[in-house]
Length: 386
Image (cartoon, rainbow, N blue to C red):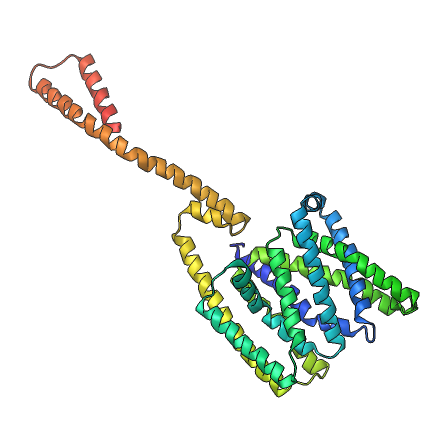
């Protein structure tokens, strides 16, 4: 997190770009018309793989890629995250084609609250009161949505669950966004190739038999998948998490507005009430996060520098904390040396007083030789300076 105001403005711009693009992405998938969702997802995986590989080569991230591939634990975790994000993409693109973007948007509204629930269930984290209220309100919203539809709202629940699990796996797997995307898409790529091969054999491939516009849109899906991840990574380095968390609600809000205004999806009473409860939950969650962030900042200011360095709020902050730590250590050495210095001065003070008494006797009596007076004067100066 950067302390530079200019850096924060740049980070806010990257966050707006990332979440703004994710918000209007349904309009992009709508351009494919009647293409099967499976074909769109397969091309998205393959072209994302190519784009990520190109950027890894340009940014010279080959060393990081090799380190991750040599680590079985991280490689296995990315297999799981690749499967989760592939399932999430498939359901979302299907929901867009089926005219159920509003329900998909509700899933991404629920995502941060589901992530908190996973933290409690799997990581043993404790809920604050605001988080309990937020999850309760969101649960009411989901219940209203299911009651109005007469069935379980599986689209928002599956989207929120898969993306929250994906975020949990990536949180526990120290890999950069770009390298992670490259490995995840490489893992899913054989399935994508197999699906496209089947479609081509059946004569249903829109990339082979379609028009130029369809081919261009399919190719661009890779870049338009990877670029927001790069923007998000830049924003995460510049903004505090409490502020970055508020931007994430921009994407489902834009998606829902586009669905209702541009594509004419009905905003039924049950959907409206459900969104109302979920927005109240989001407000409670956001206020709780802001309060927790301010409290943590207050503790941060009160903590010693060597404690702050352990928390690691970014490269600049860690470097500054290390410098503060060195100054604290040097200051501690001076403070420890001070009592010793005072004891030495206390021991030397009687000697100095005795010398001054002797000097008074000499001044009252016969004048001492010049060499003796010079020696006494130098001794007095030495003791006074110490």
